[in-house]
Amino acid sequence: MSQQKETIANSMLEELGIGTPEEKQEEFRLTTERFKTERKDRAWKPPVPKSQRHSLNKKPVTSAHEYAERHPEILTPHTSSKALVDAVLLDLQKKGTMETNGTGAQVRYSTEDWNTIIRVLSTYFADVLEGAGFIYGGAENVLGLQRAVADIVKYRFKARVGDAYMKIAIGDKE
Image 1 (cartoon, rainbow, N blue to C red):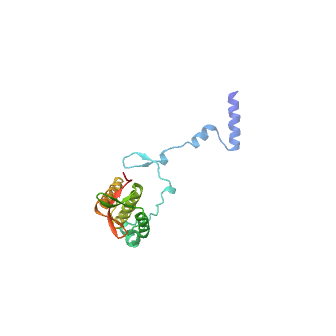
Image 2 (image 1 turned 90 degrees about the vertical axis):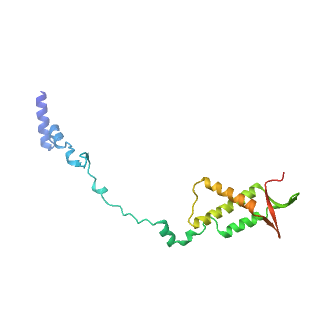
Image 3 (image 1 turned 30 degrees about the vertical axis):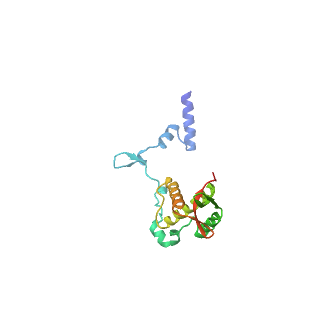
């Protein structure tokens, strides 16, 4: 009986143009041979589809030197302008208080004001150096520059109060 069912089913499938399941499997059997290409090392890899074969239109790269020639304004300080630095420093200059002690007169700045002065000076100094083509050697060098500027200003310079120049003191009075 099963033989009769198979023949009836096959004849109906043939009438519809579908064919038998075994024929269909052979018809659509995937072979990897037509998708393989041979590499130099004799291994197989699939071919690259045509949609991925297009070349990218790469833009020419401009070197830092060429960019500096085209745009000379990048060679000057950019983070803070001289006018801005001058305004901030003039404001901070007024915050120093004059005091007299046994060794003579001096100008005392609070620690917060002194740190602001040093931060502004070292930032501007670093901007000028960047305009000259130098950069920081690393993140720790930022603090090193601030310490060096603080030492230079404190020990090599005097603060002006009116017409007089006085030594610099930092921190609250003891």
